[in-house]
Length: 243
Image 1: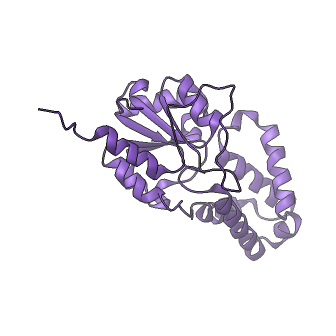
Image 2: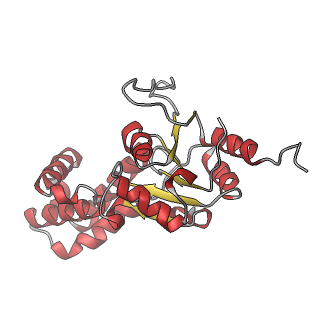
Image 3: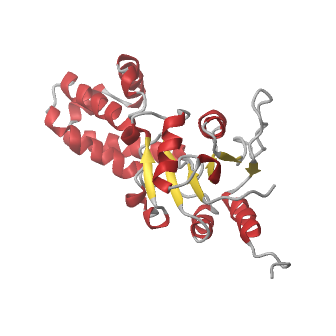
């Protein structure tokens, strides 16, 4: 399928890199930091207890469902306070966590594919997560990064897709949104009027995921970002019949 594309918005977690290893690394870094700087909190809040507390914070603050950073800060503050540690350490604790969270391991095709895509059209990051492209080192390939926290609403809300289109100076139908999540990325972007590309890297066993029949299919589906770059190269290649 070929259609004109003036810009691309991209999801980050599980589209450019797997999120689970990054979160595991961040939690391990937080464990080490707590042990060194807030040992009573380390003893009181091992990972299973932290996860339960995070769920409680999420339930108590539904208006912050789009703001993972604020949820994490509230969780850390409560951990420190309830264990008798200095709540003034909350920013340092978050930095220990967040620095490791941004040490992502890209999928093998991601960086080269992003460079190829960025050479063709403007790219923008559109994520519900709080990864920082500047820390990760990919910001030079993007026009901007728009997160749910900064926007005030998360995907699949149409408003975050439309806000990205406004910043790109494009109508929604001229923008291709690329992501791994069926509901948040593909269905959300389609409802907002964007073109859609599902990156279907497969399940835990490497088998392609089945598209849910209740939803209209995406405009494009590829197993890697490199395959999308191949498609865009072909779509934008000069016609041999051009005068």
